[in-house]
Image 1 (tube, one colour):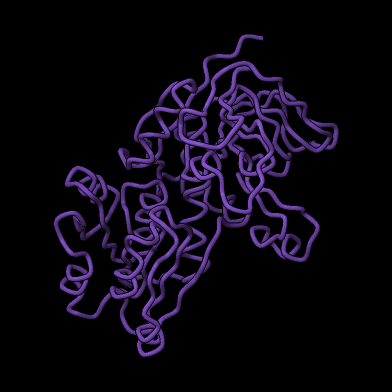
Image 2 (cartoon, helix red, strand yellow; image 1 turned 90 degrees about the vertical axis):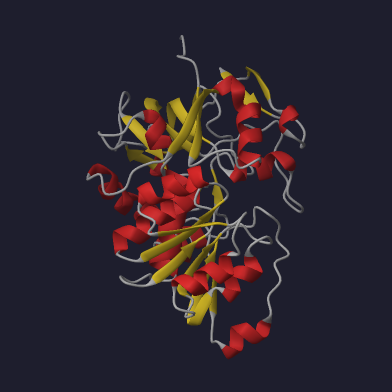
Length: 348
């Protein structure tokens, strides 16, 4: 099959498009013909290399996958060849206390398809655990479906499960143009919160308003902390949705109201965020960490896509062989929403 892989860590130039062996699914797995695979910052981090994390090389990235089932293992009887599916990107052991409690994203062996040891969907074919296969909403195209799993699952778990965002609360969503930011705006509006969001251009802010953000801040031209205080009558926001890290961390803490909650899932601009602990204890703030979400949460999310209450945000669709160019664009924040890669039609 054709795939995008890398044999050493480095910049986008290490990505190679070419022939690799077809995956061989196990008895509990499903072989999926990939119709679309969306990019995430995870793909960049894995390609660059993470301290203390050993990746099996050569490696195929890509965890946001939509496609058509081609083969099913003998232990899989809930999906059939020919069905249109999307893939839950999170993998876990399935038998520990966390998994059996429905908190599979807390599993000690939790990882992602296309993450550390398992090849992903930047290919014509991918083998995935049968438990991770989800029927694709009928009203979505493949490129749209691929833009759903990781970012909407992450944003839902952050806002609904972790900080329990409430109707009428003010929430600051950092970086509206990112995949997870564009998902968070929609989920917060679905709940009935007032959304304040940041972005680097008027074009991105306009798109954020189309998704439901009531207040927008151009962080290149305005101090977002001052703007948040102005927009909330000096109160601050009840919730901050963080994922950019070092560049925005200190300001995000300062943007919180008394008894406010900050939830974070990433650190794309750096992990050494400065925290003045006096703000944390004097103003009784709570800081939540969050990673992905459970399989049950993603299944629950699907009904909002079927009803049209939530919608994928696709910036552009590119051919699979343009993966290096696509990752460069993502590194430079040159998109609003998701960049999706599509393999050429496979000829068997």
